Every structure is written in C-alpha cells, then in structure tokens.
Image (cartoon, rainbow, N blue to C red; front, side):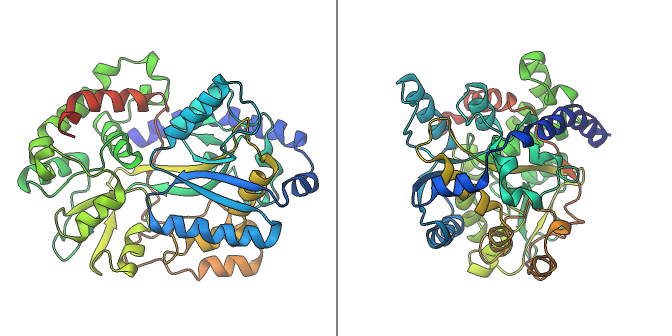
Length: 407
C-alpha cells in the first residue's frame, strides 16, 4: 500500500522537473568554450573522505583528468558536507562572490536544497550541456533531475546511485530480519548485536528515514515540506521504536559508530551482526579486500528500502567553474562510470542508461562482476523515495535531543 502512495507523491513533483529539463537545455553554453576555459586549471573538489575506496577512485579520476585536460583535481576530504555548505555561506556573507575555495562539491538531498534555496549554485543549467548527459535517460530514471523531491534544474550532475541495504554474515545469521518490526524483535532478543551510524551521518539519518517510512506506512506528509505537517504526531512511532530498541543496541545505545566504515569494521569483527549501508556493492568490495568474511550477504526489507542518486554541484563563486564542469562530465562518462561500478574499485551503481551506450561499453558493463554479496537488480527493484529534504534537520535535531547525550 505505502509503495503506491510513494509513487503517487513522486509523480506529483517529477512532472515540473521534466518541464524544467526541456526548456533549459537550449540555453546551454558551448562545450568547446568550456573546454578551452577549463584547460590547465585547478579544481578543488570537496567530497566526503571517509572511505579508502572512494578516495582511491577520486585519485584515479584526477590522473585521467590531468592527462586529458591538464586539470589538477585536488580532493578536499570532508567529514560532513554541511561544513562545505557553511563555508560557501560564509564566503557569500563576506562578499567573496568570485574566487571561492570550492569548485566542485559532492552533494545531495538537504544540502543541495539549502544551496539552491540560498542562490549559492551556478545560475545556468550547465548539466544538460555536458557531452556525457546524452547517455542518461530521465524517463527511465526521473530521479536524475529531482533530488529528494527538489528539482535539480540542471544545477547538479548525477554521479552515482545508492540504495539502503543490510549486510550480515550468513554463517551466523541465516534468516535476517526483513522489516522494521522484525528488526525490533531481533534487537530485543539479541542485545548488543545491532547499531547504526550516529546522526547526522548520512547513513545514520537514512536509517531513521527508512524506519519512519515503514512505521508510518509512507505518510503522504513525508513528501511535502515538514512545516505543513504535524511533526510530533507523524514521528511518534519512530521515537517509540528507537526508545524500545536503545537499551539493547551495541554498547546499550550509549555510543554509536561515527560512520559506515566504522560500522563495517564492527561487522567484520563480529561485534554486531548487521550493518546498514547505502551502497549495494560495498559488502562485496569489503569481502574482496578481506574486511568482511566470504559468507557476508546483503538484503533489503520486504517493503523496499530508500534509494536515491548522489550528485556533483558547482558553487556560485567557484574559482574554476569551467574546469569543474569538465570534471563533472568525466565523472559522468561511460569510462568513469564503468570504473566506478566495478566492485573491486568502488562498486557504485551507474546513473547511465546502458541502452544508450555504444555496444562495446554495454558489453563492458554486462561483464562486470556483481560480487558475492551484491543483490541482483531484480532483488533491488523494490525502492522507496526519499522524503522531502526539510524533514532531515528536524529528524537530526530531535534524535540528538532524545538520544545523543552519551556521545
């Protein structure tokens, strides 16, 4: 039932996005001019730096961009994307409208909405002019132009897909819990064997949203601005679930892992039995690297799990906006998407439409190993749309008020 309600809400906001796409593409700047202006520049790419695989991938991309465009890609490693948003706001307040410190930013959801609302992004719909955009299909994947219910309007370029999955050791836990209610029962009967990253960590907040959607049967209010809803009434089942679970969480809920890599290590060490991730291929990559046992597998909840797309955005005051567009185009290219999708490299699913790729690239994607712990596309087919981004800060603040005193 609640999946149908999500689809209806999603359809209501995606039609304006398609209209924006159709009218914006005509105003795109000449790509040849972009290449000429961006050649030889430095791009300060602010991106989360908490995962060695992702850091290695960005380093590889930097080498390719140096070879093809003489671009120096500098990875500014973040622990929280919100810190970069705050820096852009501070530069705006100080009148630094040119030569900003951030050229490209890995972003999605609430942070994109905040940047767009404050006018802190490039004005033009630059994404639709990227040569690699031709390999996408917004009809098949409308989330390419809608970020957490916020129309992108060509102001951020899709980079990868994500879906919430649960990793576990099948040799120890043959029948994992496949719903919020079943997970609550598991936590009650297996004290100390479950936890989640501490909000405002992205995966931690995503887990809260997953629970909220399940426990409220995807209340339609979740897909509208939170100011229009009764926050206390709608979130009541979530807080009741967490309050019941907390005493039986890892370390009795007094502490939480800082992020998913830390949680993954807890799973590998056997301290917890289930780990929440937002990358369906992450567990397989961890098996290959030896971080997780070969018996590790993943699953999603029976009613589906959160799925979204993550993006690259360019601040309004970027020092090298043309070079940043070149980087974004490369990150969207079949070459870079194929490399990123390899579970031995990163395992981040592609945002490209394989039907639009040349035959040799289609074959290359088809030949990618799926990984021992990675679910098939069919098994990942049941997805849940992200709530409106305005719910995130309210959820974070309320979770902190109720549960973060011991951290």
